[in-house]
Length: 577
Image (cartoon, rainbow, N blue to C red; front, side):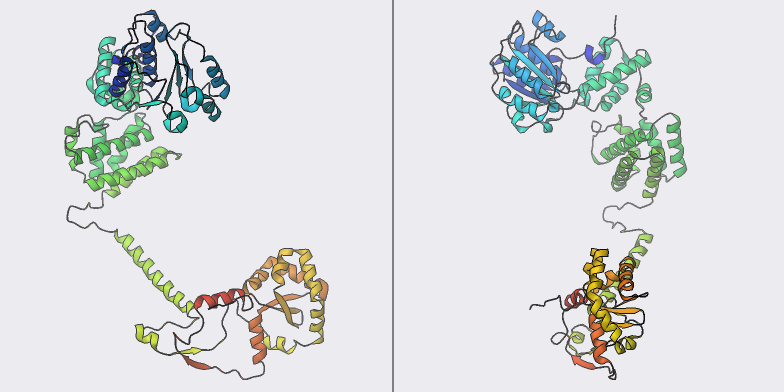
């Protein structure tokens, strides 16, 4: 006889067979008993919790020849044929394969016809969230006002993907994960009926692995029973599922507590030799430390642990770690677990994570009433160096904002004293004057330079033809003198001057100057203000003027005004009070 998978052979056929969904079962049975069955239901919840099974049982209950009844008899012809999927008026539709609008339109056209074999037409749409937006729109009106003989049961694991208009037209039931005790009791019953000899610890571990899904638990039990020929032990379950016994994790925890890096690496190597995967070991280790935290913080936490079956036996291990240390370990492992998803060598990253835990253990945990050390000595030195650099930068910034005059200490007294300030010209970022400045001033009225000024519009036009972006910056300057092969151009704006000084832009300008003025020509730049000041002071003895002025009342403009003038020039900056 052909073998049938356990999850299929033990699929619930009546409400009493369902595990862990009593809040839903009672509501549906009362609705059937009082003849208040809705036209549309939405069953949502994790996989393997009984959504589709409950939908089929409900379809049998409303169409049972001895009903409608709170429980289908499973003996009449109708119940048997619905269970076998042989009744054409009870349709189970897979929305993942029939997700288009055409399939829903076909359903909408056929639903108006009365059932031919049973009392009510039942449409079970599984994975309904896979329907397209157009299909949902086509289903809306029919779902809201179906014929009296029709019923919809929608099942999904992702209710958040359903439109609110669909959810509002259904009675929603949320299936919860099956508890550990209910799963273990159900597995024990099935093992007894199937004549499978299984240890209680093995069934508990299977129940924990299934994460609340009864179907997953039965699939694991079916696989392990086939491997062990009817004898299921805890060690065999660990070997088949790639799990690690809690005792082995305890040995690893002891090595971490003793700061024994060699013992930690030897334990990891032994796991790898047994064929364990690094990511699975990381997952189980996270669960283990989580269980230790539960044991340490929560009294009577036997039913709250995930991987530790006997919490009392690990009380001594939990006492070796403080709560703070366990929190840091879990946080560290979680971060490394995320990185392992993209790592080329997960085992190496797993080993690094454990060595990191060894170093975490070097930091003493703070007891109640004690202050926790803020940082390691190396971190303290780094912080001091950064503080020194910040203080130095603050001093330099203050000097820049004061236009190069060093700040004097003394608090309010110093700020109220008159300060001796040198009335020198403002220094820009490129304020260095070109060499031979006196010769440029002497030749500014020569005939050769006048010829250059006359040809300057043609020079600008040629620069524009060569590169329009260079022309946009170059028009800000004007020729003021020429000396031998050099042409001195004064700029009003510092940004324009800096841009033209770039090598690529300078080459374009010098090429055009050589073409129109003849011979090899060099471009020399200066700020317009510096040229004007130099021209005014030419021939006069240079004296340093000192003046007294009050810092607050008679001072110069604000620092940001000075900086704006430096960047854009006085002709482009308008100061408003």
